[in-house]
Image (cartoon, rainbow, N blue to C red; front, side, top):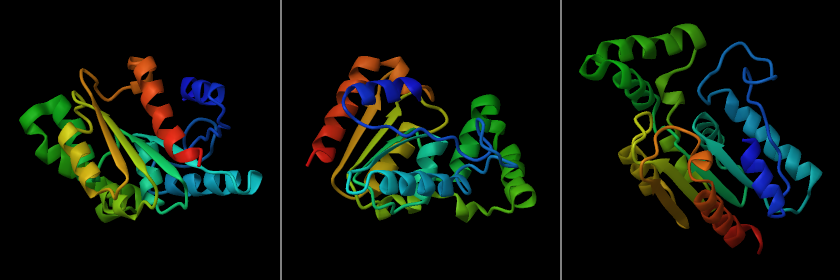
Length: 202
């Protein structure tokens, strides 16, 4: 996320970067696909609100980070950018297994989903970001790659359809589940800054 932080800072935005629990240098027993990570998003927004009272706040969430932001919604922020965010954990797991095993994915997917409850104490119903996107009370910009096998374009369109206005959608041709800023830095910067400038400078 450092390159994103650099261009946002250069454009005049203050930036806070966070490690989710069990990521980077932040302690935690296990990655929970957004279930516990949502509290990190809430804490980051609270930190910014306390440090910069009265300032407008935007969140950029990529993949699990975006799922965490949705699972903690509404956050009381002014703009939200979501990149390659899975709608349901069933689809997220199935897509990743299917990318390796093709049509043989159904049984391994079910075994992995059962592990959620056994190992993490999390139910499938706890990991449905699509159920929260209509609760987002700010403009939302949804981005994904047309060739993304982990979060498909069709799934991204469903997320967009469930979001409230104002909303924008950008599906990037030739892009998989990857760093979309690194793939197309100039166009990414142009579109993201246009969105933020529209809703963060009032």
